[in-house]
Amino acid sequence: MAVEQPTAREAEQTRIHNIGYRNYDGPRLGRAYARRSLYSQSLRGAYGLGRSVKSKVLPMLLFVVMCVPALIMVAVAVATKAKDLPVDYTRYAIIMQAVIGLYVASQGPQAVSRDLRFKTVPLYFSRPIETADYVRAKYAALASALFVLTAAPLVVLYAGALLAKLDFADQTKGFAQGLVSVTLLSLLFAGIGLVISAVTPRRGFGIAAVIAALTISYGAVSTVQAIAFEQSSTGAVPWLGLFSPITLIDGVQTAFLGATSAFPGGEGPSAGQGLVYLIVVLGLIAGCYGLLMRRYRKVGL
Image 1: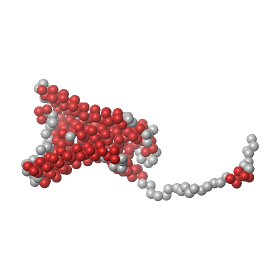
Image 2 (image 1 turned 45 degrees about the vertical axis):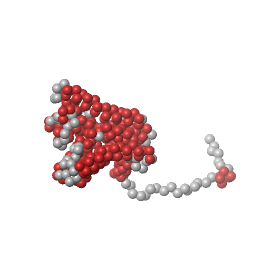
Image 3 (image 1 turned 90 degrees about the vertical axis):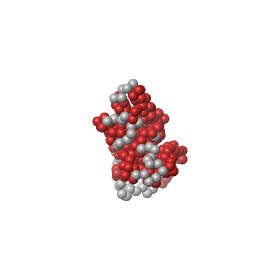
Image 4 (image 1 turned 135 degrees about the vertical axis):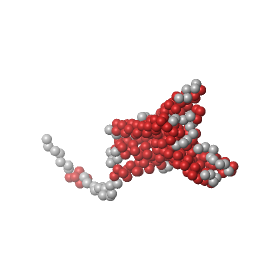
């Protein structure tokens, strides 16, 4: 079949333009840099930094709500020259667990749901970053954000205790115990929040599911514990605490960090039971990481 040749006029109108595309010859920063960038951006996003004013309102408000009671306690302790703080460092997060749960419910879906909704996860994996890098960065970012949220009021309490000239050794020990407790809490709550949020790309569903898992479970377990205590089934009270994230943290810190338990009657788990609590907490953290890895391997295909 003969190929039609362009006419002289058409040949004159034909041009090949060199628009200057060049190969990138700069440094290749690799996976580590991409992982750090994803972590920092996710951490900033957990407090609305770099986003719209509307996105900053809720996380900043919850941060203030977490810190204001600590400031009030410090002011009272300094003004009255109290011999001790009104609340132990290990008890503060337990008291404020509703605020912590609301923060996880709002920021967990924000961390992962948008990537799922707009199908941008495969774009991450088209670059040097891998599934493990994405999961670790997101997990570490939300856990770090939660640690900031829960540790900040403890810092306020500690600074106030020193200003009130309370015993330095006792306050430092209590502060260190509180930091260990909120570290475990941050890892556990971040894992649960991300696993639930990664199930659905719809942020509203994720928020409702996280609230149910963290807050409603605590209310249900506390109610059943109270009933068991009133029925003189005190032996069942510590074991019931295994079925709620916040009571798991309560049990661990009661058994190993010298905390006062919030369980009915103030009787927390024994050292042996506390070991079971610790194994369950660490198992849940590892399990959440594993579930996230499986979820994003499927999403990235």
